[in-house]
Length: 282
Image (cartoon, rainbow, N blue to C red; front, top):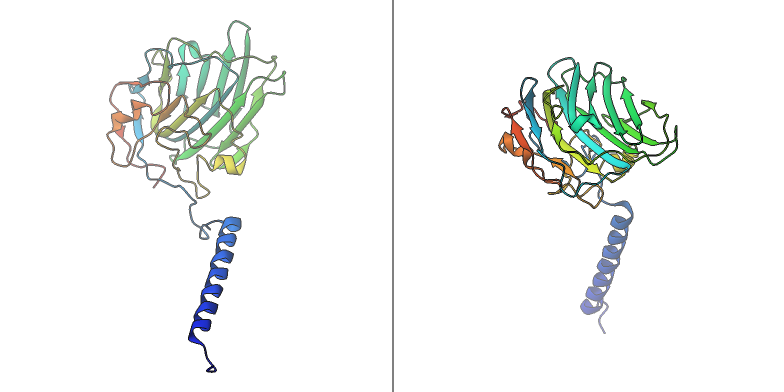
């Protein structure tokens, strides 16, 4: 036999390669793909935004959301860029304001009610100047099925968990989600009109996710502060499509923002939406 056996050498090389491949597979399973330092994070997408002019631009459902039901939980996520210092701007609301989510002179504001039981919860945060002309991300989750003073209110603005001022003096209650109409960019009676730009409006009624937990927040906003892919119907964050998901792909017609990829049915444009000059993807 010669001092070197080519067949034996080849078999040894193949064995070494197989062992290296197995080690690399195990390493990737444990560590996963890595985001480069300073990188934006996984799942970022380029989206467009729409402009509400603060005069007559808003959306209405014209009825209740499809298959809607009262309940104690919801999740909100959206991006806003205000064109003026806020007075009272509506993000989303229903008839008579039993659900009102918006911005007032103090900052972010949300109020939810149960009319029959005469119970309510309101949430205010004034730690971020939302009228500074920049894009801001707002994420909120609420569960009212707890005793007075113990309801779950989780708020994050621009990736930072907040401790908002909460009025919670009532017992557990279901929120009056089921109403004759819902609106975006104004109340259902065309009041408190939103003046600015909006993108990626997500509202999941009767779902809950603690949006102050980093892993959950990054289902809506990347670690680099940009929009991420929520899925064609908005179901990626929780596995279930939200009631409302208003989204524009890059270059898409502005009025398509009203189409609603969620389960609640399409909205109608009042006034004329236009594509915003910037988006939170920029």
